[in-house]
Every structure is written in structure tokens, then in C-alpha cells.
Length: 157
Image (cartoon, rainbow, N blue to C red):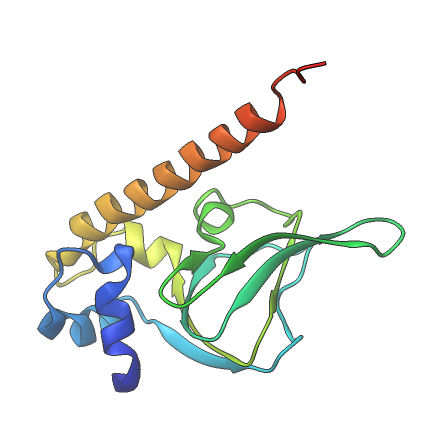
């Protein structure tokens, strides 16, 4: 995990948190790192998730398969970026998408409930993390709204 502290320092989720606080923070959040091979499923569609991921190394894709087996890539998520946070925090019962490792990847998983609930030690990090998470989700929402706006414009014909 120590190899990836610099990646985490650069992540928007940990913005404003001192580098020396990262190790105790990750311990408080019970963060777990895991390795995935290329093509391996991280989150399968149709399941429920309570944690979100951060890409420490490699790349993951958010994909959707249709009835005929055609796969649409909805997002490519690179190093330092989050995935699955909206579904985990909203406690969606059935994922409408899958997340797969596009390359050999090292991923960090954080339980959304641990992030939003203050711990027994009353760590000062939680309010900052909640603010950062809200900012990340808001920016993604704005980006998706812009995509909808661009694709729903009338043609010039």
C-alpha cells in the first residue's frame, strides 16, 4: 500500500489531507487493496455494492452489455480516479453496469458507510472526505448533464 500513497495524495478524494495522515486514515476506513488481471470483473452487473474503488495502477472500464452481447464502454477510469461511488453511496440494489479491469490493475476499495459515518476515534478526516466526495459526485453530475445537453440538441438540418 505504501507504494501507492503518492497516487492517493493526488486523488481528489484526499484533497486537503496531509500525506502523513493517509496511512491512519486508510486504516480507519478499513480500505483494502486488491489485484485484478486484464478482463477480470470487478463489479458484475445485477449485484449490489457497498464500497467504491480507486484505481491505484492500471485502468478499469464501466461497461454495459445488451441483450445480444454487444458491449458499450461507458467510461474509462484511470489512476487516481474513483468508480462505483454513486452506486455504493446510493445503495442501489442492482448495478445496471459492470466494472471490468481494462488492464492489469491494482484497486483500493473503501466502504461508503465507513466514509460517511464518524468513527469512535472522531477522526477529523471524515468531514473533509465527505466534502471531497460531494465535490467529485457533483462534478460528474455536471459532466453527465452537459453530455445529455450536447446529444439532445436539434440537428442543423
